[in-house]
Length: 632
Ligand SMILES: [Zn+2]
Image 1 (tube, rainbow, N blue to C red):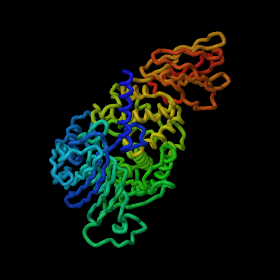
Image 2: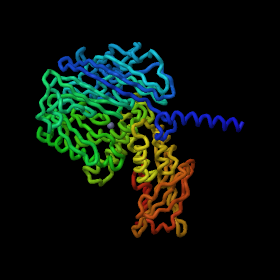
Image 3: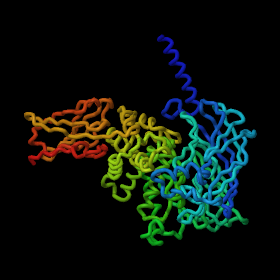
Image 4: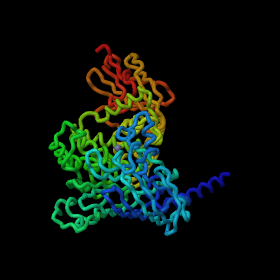
């Protein structure tokens, strides 16, 4: 029996090593693999009909241990048709996105979006496919074996929808084309299987690889994109300001050729009125800004045209500062360029760039830009599956951007997270909170999705810093970035990195905070004099157990920190605040509803006792977290 067990064990280990060495040796999940794409696309664009013809060559490598007999493509533009899943969802959800509502339902034939596939071959052989809503299912001519690379060649045609959500023509600020999710895009396949989710207006997930994109478009248009322009001298003015004198070739159309690698998407935008400004981040990327010089003051009615333009002119200095902060605290941005493009309908991230609406106050313009550029780390380089890990994507981004905005506008003073804690407490009180662990598309309400992803995701990190200590959190976030860059880590992968960094067991926290809507609630129950000592009884009123920081203030004004770790952590946080002496107490077994500690002072010399003065623990009722000696 024993022999058999050991034998099996050895076979399993050998099997795993082979898979791991075939692909990614440095990833921290043993046996990790991911698929790979190489897109070469050529697009002939007609600005009169808002349609384009496209050729797509896709080299697809199956690094999985599985044989694939079918593949799936996303055809996102098909969502912008009356009766699409996105349309029905928007018309039936209780709190629809105000940008969408019933607008898709009322689109005319020449206003809808579509992607039509005219032909598709696999290694030269025709394949059959079925398109339903935004997903195309392809029956392969030959199965794709593990380790095999196949060539898909496709001819497609598309009509750019009127701008409703993220992508489209003629946005509210008059940008002609915001081209996101504009090409047939291979769905991701990973250890969980296919992720061919019909698009209902929310998350994206893509395969890492190379994009080579050639766009032929009317010569009056300036094209901005999340890639490196290969032929700046050919397109001349509008791109490099210093090259404005370059002669553009004759003809109706210009050809823009972009290339990039280590990406999982490619976005571009085009407008005749873009102005182009560049800035350099020291030891970082070159920044490009594309915006219109004749802003409509719709979103910022109090700002004059001059002020709106001035905001854009000041944006580069703030963007540089944000990149420097990110590089220092969260890991280095790995690409040579980043582009901020006026377009879209709010702010949306695309790894090497963003589409944002531009007519905003300075703080709002900077705020959206900072949020979207932080996504280059959280969603771009660390390419979370947004559908399941929306709370990492938006939560980690919100966490880092709150710190940056606090630095840029408040000089680092104050608590940048307190507003989000209040939002969380409100939704708990309303009783409409939903677990974070859900697929993003399937939340009952948009508001519950927003709180789960942006707010609880941000608190997840800040509160983790309470558990592990602030420095361990910072080190862990950086380590996570370098361990997992250009890959698709999960929530469990992040927790493993944090466990390695902190030396603590942390999965319990992930289970409670992410998978349930249970809450935290501690209180100081009793404070009793006992000879020259004082007994303090702390009670756990909520269901989520947490370690306790208790800070005691004596009558001489001195502060003393008593730290009660949880037994299930099998570890303790570093002493965060060396000016305050810390006493580590016996760990609290989580089943115990209360914990009594003895302070080495008589009650008369104690002025005040408080649970977690840092306010990082999301205690839903702080009314009994402070005890004040009434004698004072
Ligand atoms: Zn975001």
